[in-house]
Length: 383
Image (cartoon, rainbow, N blue to C red; front, top):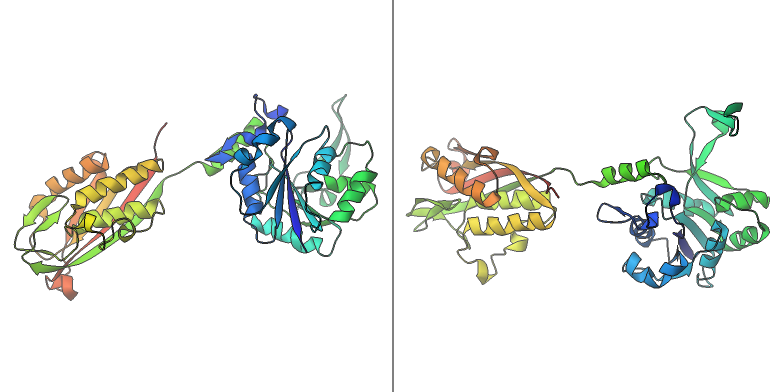
């Protein structure tokens, strides 16, 4: 079985308003169109993509869609939906025998929905994902605004996409549809007398039609607070300085490390990287790189803060605990906190540094090591 996915993006989106087709509007960091194309490009069961665009945008197709892992072809939309889908079919390679047709205005389609449609189209000639109606459904005389009937709710299902078809059946029902308009391909199959199977859709597989839909979609992907945790530990050896956040505590006994061994800064770095999904300190500042030999922890922390800003987040607050037997840290906490706040770009009351001993337990408790734990929260940068 070879599967082609046709993503229909030829509409003008007039109900949404504005001067751009709605499928090109952004939801978060990318357009509605890209999100829909990516869902099928990532699916292992899909072999080829066809994107149907307004005729004047076909030449821009590769730019609008971006790079894809699967072959991606482009077709011009027609006057009616079935004309657009028909143009898309002509761009499918001859070996494609199963076709998925998806609305670009449904940017949140999941792999699970695509799986269910693909599984069913192996048995049925036409398949539609749908969800059962939850509300009481009324038939209304639109001219008089009067109810003419109450429909049995258990018989009402709300159709979604992608709709799946055997290629020969899809071509047949579109030809048989003649001049009648259709809002989806399944209705053409119904008119042609072809049975249409239902599989479970998802509530999240919404269609973006109105400005309220667009606002809800954007709120769904809006960046929120991010939290990361960090931890670092170093053995203590004679002849090394002990530095925490640039504050020099002792000169005669400090951490054994490639850099300055500042466990506090290193733990906070890992917390920040964790919050942005950026790996750990060893990935960005490896101890095999001579550039970081004796590098100051505050410098590495400043570089990491820049990484969070590049991703659109700033530090909201940091909470850290240093575990050390000696020297006592209480006299130094104020300077340490101020130094961290300066590099993190936040007020000192958003930085908490606590000191603990390990009550004589393990290497830290014996005074042979120092450790630090940190939690950091990031928030989206305004503007």
